[in-house]
Length: 328
Length: 261
Image: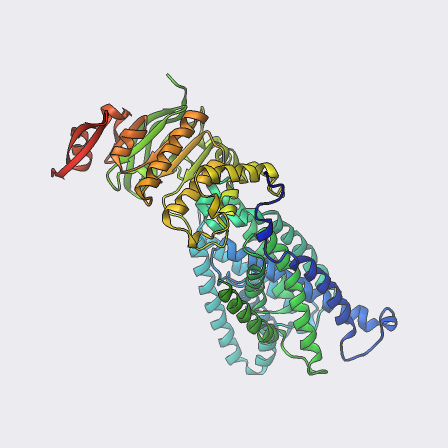
């Protein structure tokens, strides 16, 4: 008898993840709107300028950044065929940090786009330099790209350390920026990141089947009809742009981009047509959760969100790894 | 005389300054099972990679069905030529079914998912290669031979008129070597595909292939029928091995005795 469904249907793992994550994200966005130093009820919320001008943009920005980093992480891990790659591997974060450090030293905090603008500029310049070095004619040499990215990261970090030693009075501000925070989130931050993130995520989703083939190998992908160089270039261009915009808006928040795609993979398998959308939602949800805890646990003071992502994420990730190992 | 499916004209290739192939001229027609043989490092794999567009030859050109390979888009080429590599990634978390399903990629638009027709083709190709029972297994859990047959199934799922295979029988036991060759023979006979296969077992070539292309030091020493091609003299020239040819059950068979150089 002929089957009339996908023969792997019964073996498709955890199909509940995507719808459940979407519902959780919506519920969490609503719930996190109420949490904070200033308490108000549902009814009061709609009339509260704190909700509209502070809390909501912060919630939206954290979801957006979490989704962006996770989607980029998922894409990078497939393009580079390396489970250790995270969205910062190409030196975007170190470039942005150097720009931010310079802006802080120049006292540009006073300007609205002083730090963010400078961070974006240096992030893009760094990545441009790295691409130039790793390109040979029309081809992009992936290993050179990764190694150049790592070298630039070390170089930039070294320069930042020097700057901090020379200007110890500004050390706190620089360190705080590099740890990442959504404390100064505003609607304008959201509006700057949103179009880049939407277009970038659409591009990654559009190429998600090609990402599966790239995961098996560039040559295999090419002989199965993928324009490998073109797809890689377009994916790397858009993902780098997304990461640069995300980092310059809120600093370097680690761990999310590395582990969310892995956690999702452990739950749904490696098919990027499922990994990418699930990472998008789970990444947003996870970042929102971490940021809400960061601003409420020790209120009125704030915890660095970057350390909370690791504090919550690492044990969860280790548990999933352990559980997955036992299921074999 | 059959139409040329693959036409190679004045093909040469260098890696850096080292010449690998030079002045290769050959045609492979419809419904032909053509073996490429020669000593290690003589350029067999390079030739295959030039034919399927993975390498751009430094000299000459390759035409597929009358059009230069360079003129094909990746998708068109993947609908025309399938390529089974010698080595395969085993560290991927895809089931054998999903891997064979990837062979349908050239026929799908980007946002399109696999259809029932695609799944039927995948099932048929896996059954043809005796891998249907392995459909849920991951590559890391398959033996070398099983993985090789899964990859042949993926190439079949591409439904291309031309198939290129790089040493598909090298990791198979004797029975599976015969099975793969029988399968390729059947495909050539029934579906009229042109199959080019790199292999080392000259007796399998004698038994199953229509043509043999003997490569020696980067150029073609002989291209034509297997019976005339695989003489003890040519074997000695290409491999430096003394060989004798006898008839076994009415078929020519080569026996190798010792190094002649």
